[in-house]
Amino acid sequence: MPLFKTPADMAQVIRHKHLSDTYKPELLTQIVDELADPSKCLVMVASKSFEDASLPIHEKWYKFNYSLEKFSEARINELKTASVPDNGLKLDLPPPNNLIPTNFDIHDEDASLSARPQLVMQWH
Image (cartoon, rainbow, N blue to C red; front, side, top):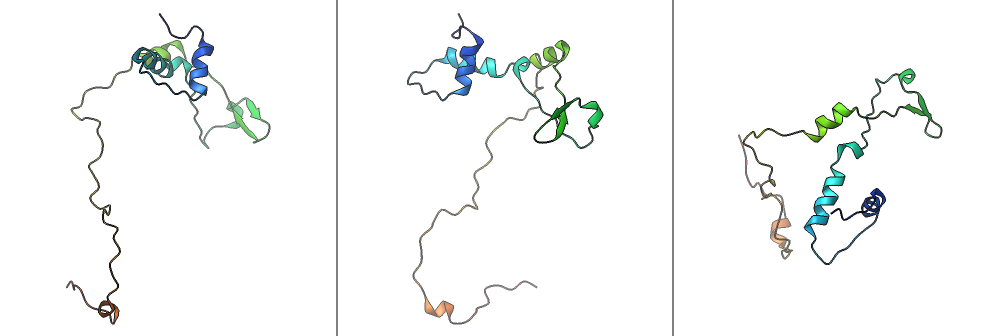
């Protein structure tokens, strides 16, 4: 049984902040299914190579031409049945960055180190 009675109910979930004290996996699954539905997506493509004559709608304020087209049923079916081949790699977090400092203590001033420049290392 769907948790949302109408599509407007789902739209309210997407548009507003929600905080829930209870974990409802069926609600999360339904929300993800709605968000991942390719028939409900909007794709924007921009390029300088588009000819103005092929873009029939003119935007009044920002002065650009555009067009609106729906996905064909064949394309929607391709998107709904898309799969990713297993290439043996896994999606994971990057390794920890050991170059980020962890000690931010400030050392006492040592006047002998600031008296004159000192050669620390020389490469040939």
